[in-house]
Image (cartoon, rainbow, N blue to C red; front, top):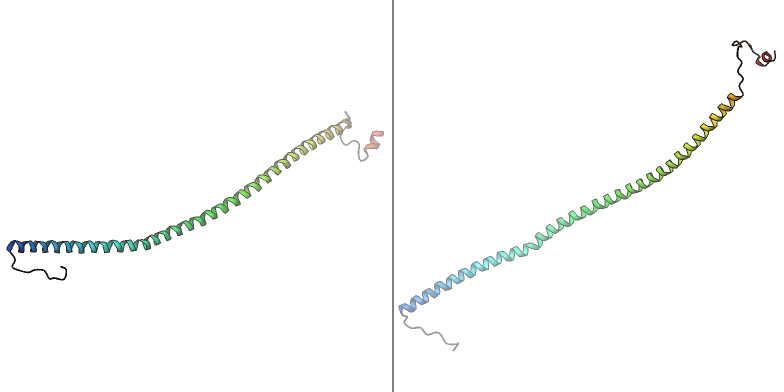
Length: 146
């Protein structure tokens, strides 16, 4: 029955050894149990510290990512600006090529006109052979009429 105290009586040496070894086993188990509990407490402490460690590391990673996003946005802006400048430069270059072509055509036309005018001017020139230089004096027309 549960309410009764255990029987105590004379113990034999074997029973005494057995109770001593049980006590040793019991104390060893208690000691192991205490060590296991201490290890469990350490593990629990480490587990509880993990979120703060992860939080710090995650904050560092997020800060780095934020910096990279900013740098990426800056580079994207620079690329967009460069593309706009390149597009404008290409447009200017195309208009300059067409202007150069027009000027080259006009220059060729003007060269042909100048050559034609020079040739026409030479056709109406008279060449007087045997007449000394500056013999006509001031009035060339009067000299030729004589």
